[in-house]
Image 1: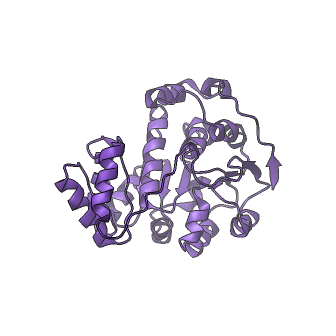
Image 2: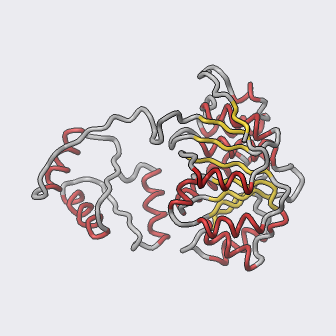
Image 3: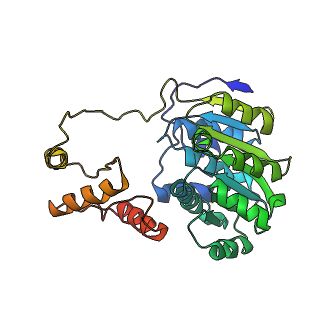
Length: 303
């Protein structure tokens, strides 16, 4: 593993300075991406040159663009049938990557498909048969497609492991190894992780070729620029206190985590009675409904 020195912050650099092609620049402008984040700026030249890259970067730093931009800008040839596989630990992250890359690659005719459990296998197969160039998925469903032969491993030129540490901590090591063992030996691998521990290093040693290392998170794993406050309350009247805090702080949007699935519905109902436009999410809700809730959040229909 070759460590690449961490550059100093350079806020003035643009995507055009990196050499990104005009049609991708247009897509970036439409998405409102005015200048590259440090991880996008530093990863692009290494990825576009064909290197395997390990990126240690915290959440909220623009990692999807760090691999999505070079994917659509040059790693996938315009007239070929080569594909890229993006592995993510959760359905939501797989969907997010698919959507972002679809926007980035729309000027180049690069179609994407998200493959994950709980969604229609038939629809995913049709998208794969139509020639989706970027496949973004969770390990279990991707492995299922590879075993069925509905995903052709021989066409995969680029492998992206997004939030690799999370995939391992969530118990996907077996699936991850089974997937990579089926892929062509001659490929490019981009690995993104908030932490680089022994398990991540073992994956890199086994499956990557002379990877370049970018350490962009320092000693921080979580996103920077977020203030943390603690309110000490008793168990009795906790939801009432939560409502008081929300009314006092008046956030544009809020995400509330609960201890149990039942509590997510109970807290949501209390917030709705108090006049808040709230929704609940947990694993018992059908995938289609969960996706609709997230879509409403993106449309700012849910506070």
